[in-house]
Amino acid sequence: MVDEIDLTKQSGGCGANSPAVTLMKYWLESGGNREVKVLATPGVQSDQVEMWATAMGEQGVKILKKDNENNMMVYIIHLP
Image (cartoon, rainbow, N blue to C red):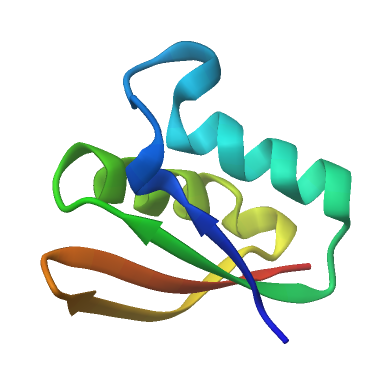
């Protein structure tokens, strides 16, 4: 079973509510060696998800799948 993180319910923006911080916190709390489904709004949230995954690429984070479903970006991300 794949865990799901729904970023669309967050206020967004910078700081502690940013998608990057949410993803990092989830990874640190739940551990790696798993896939996670991430729901994000198109635009700022999806850009931040992709930038975070790119920045963490050296640690083995990969976007395995990216789809636009019902005006929402859906990612499957591998966390090492």
